[in-house]
Image (cartoon, rainbow, N blue to C red; front, side, top):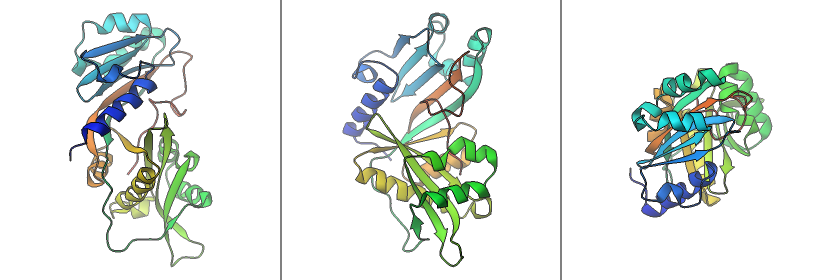
Length: 251
């Protein structure tokens, strides 16, 4: 699936702002751009639509000048660069976006926007998954429920936070007993439809080692657009905090 040129321009605008650049920085003619920030909580490398951006302290930018984009996209590279400065691992992930409404099966489970159902779903899932996705803390959630149970049993849920008033950054969580049954794809489709109705561009971020999450993104109609690699610097944000380099999806 290909994204429309207008969609790409808007995504570039959003990420220019997220990374602290001028609005047109991710769309200009340079192959790589740098932003020096000696108080940055993260060292972050983003590759998006063939453009590269690095944000971090002076020592990181100096070290990166002799490294390729492939090298900088590796989590191990940023960790090696930052360890003398207290760097801690955060992650390496692929970025996906979509600009087409999803297709739905003829029938599916009912959808609830009740925050209590998001909390109930989290209680069914491993703590690491719950912390990684942060579903109940998202601005908007939709949870698939089993209408034959009493009380209603949550099956899977998706939600999104709004970034820069432009992107809908999605997350999805599926109850262990309901995985590999298409629940995640259905929940994501609902969240995508709701976010697009709100005028946002859906964004999906999947760790490079999470093949299930990557497949869910592609099944939901997302197109791969780049990658993001981040490490937390000494005194910076905790990995679970809401930052552009934060958590990824669980299928």
